[in-house]
Amino acid sequence: MAENTITIVSFVLTLMVFSYLLGDLPLIGNLYRVAVYIFVGMTAAFTLIVSYEGVILPYLQDIQNQSTSWTALGWRADITIFAAALLFGLLLLLKPVKSLTWLTNSVFAVVIVVGASVGVVGALNGTLFPLLHATVALPDDLTADFNALVDTLLIFVGTMTGLYYFHYQVRARSDGSEEQSRVGRGFRHIGKAFLVTALGAIYASTLLTSLTILTERIGFLFQFGA
Image (cartoon, rainbow, N blue to C red; front, top):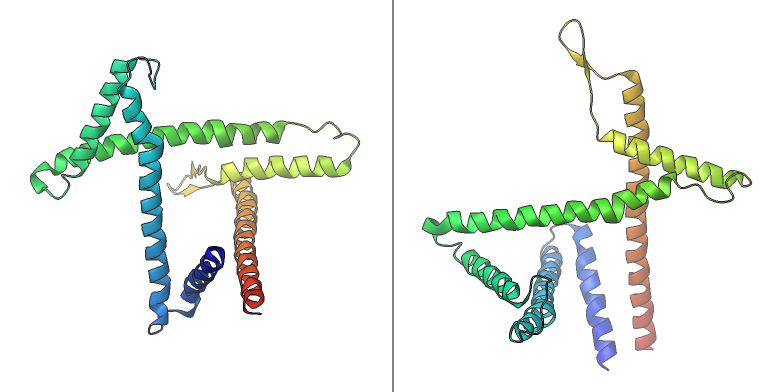
């Protein structure tokens, strides 16, 4: 019974999200907003629960035992890190106080800088470098399989021109104006074509996945009603 209830609720929420396609019609136009509010609220609650049970609670339990440590710096360093995190959290709660806005802005700056640094390192080590390695890596049957050769060339050209699309370089003309070389414009157009194709494929895949889920929910409801 609980599984059927969850399925019906999920189907109703799916229809509420798809009501966005109907525009700002009376009553119907607010269904999408309600679904988004529910999603944001549940996401925030889920994040809070996971953070407390998976991070804060185990950390509190470990700092009470001197024989355990979350870092290689030792037990005292764990207490210092926890105190600093607690202080940052309290400073963020002071955001409504205008006279202390500079403190909360400083905390936001630290969080943003650290998050950006971690994100850049993760993107380089987890995405860009493996992508470049996979691009230049030749398959074992490259010489014997023409399709493998074409795929490798397409991946290489698409990756290089896609990266070049975000590089803009011009040269000065005699009259003081600036222009981009024909070779540069050509590479940018090729990269743009690959990027548009990739984004179109991702968008189509997202729509196909959504419609597949909706069709499966509709089929389940018909079976459930029967």
